[in-house]
Amino acid sequence: MPQQTTEVRTAGFADLDARTFHDLLKLRIDVFVVEQHCPYPELDGRDVEPGTRHLWLTDGGAPLAYLRILADPDGVARIGRVVVAPAARGGGQAGRLMTAALDLVGDRPCVLEAQSHLVGFYARHGFTASGPEYVEDGIPHTPMRRTAGPAPTTPTIDV
Image (tube, rainbow, N blue to C red; front, side):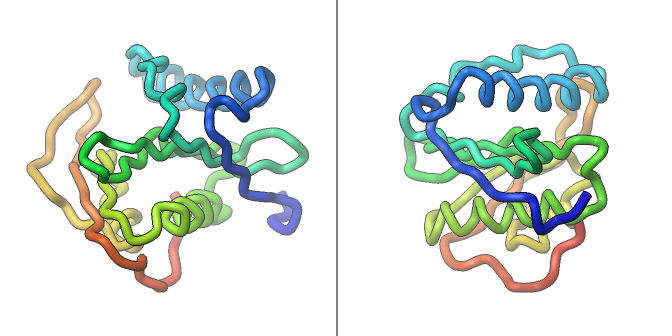
């Protein structure tokens, strides 16, 4: 999959056409619900909030990787639903998408709930553990926070 053909896209819910939103949800459900065996309410109502930004990488229109940035009421940006299509894993897509997300977040503080085996990946983007590990849907998670300021420029390795 040649990386030079991929592009980062960003949109609010009102700017997403039905096909794109369908494809993004399908990727999320295929990985989080089906692959990871976690039946949970994927549609939580936050996708449609005015402050939510959807970011994804495409190659010929198909989403390769996705995440969303939520605007929490306290002004903190919350990154979630970070996902890479199985066929696109190992090619740097998650790192590229996180870099784009943090550029969009700017100097605001940012939080996320990392699957614990990915703590090192998020640490390379300036996040540190901000609480104890917990289990959600049978998967260990670690709350993480990135304080206001630019992300480190160390190279990233994709998940």
